[in-house]
Length: 160
Image (cartoon, rainbow, N blue to C red; front, side, top):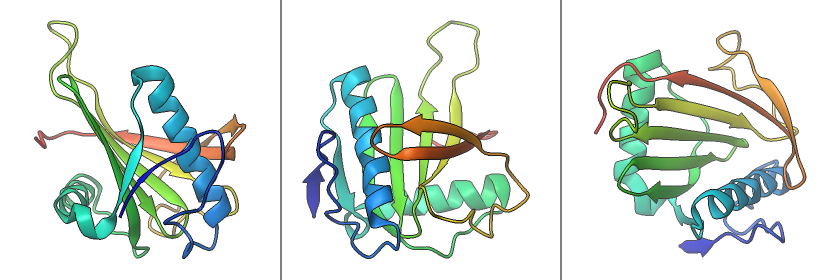
């Protein structure tokens, strides 16, 4: 199932099984607005079944870089890609969103490319037990998502 996210009207399409479906949909709409404003990119999500290769790639990164494996299933995947960036985002049933910002080459010669895993938590969800005590979460207000808690870690290895 492919769905183009509307960032003006929050819709739970594809996220209905989440206990925080409304809040996760708000976070997804917030991401769609960001990608539209920054890249003029129509934010399209795909069901997890359609993006198994990308999910395997994420799971390998999480396991190898931080010994992380999440119990909540992934519901949807969105992918932004251009000449410089590969930026998939993964929507988990519990309300968490992970993204992998992977700069293919450094924009400035001599600088290390930006490569990190971002973690965002929907309003109303607990910090997953797999992350407890491992990350500090900053808080950010969003008109579409309410209060977003976020953190990240940088990648040490090459993944593409």
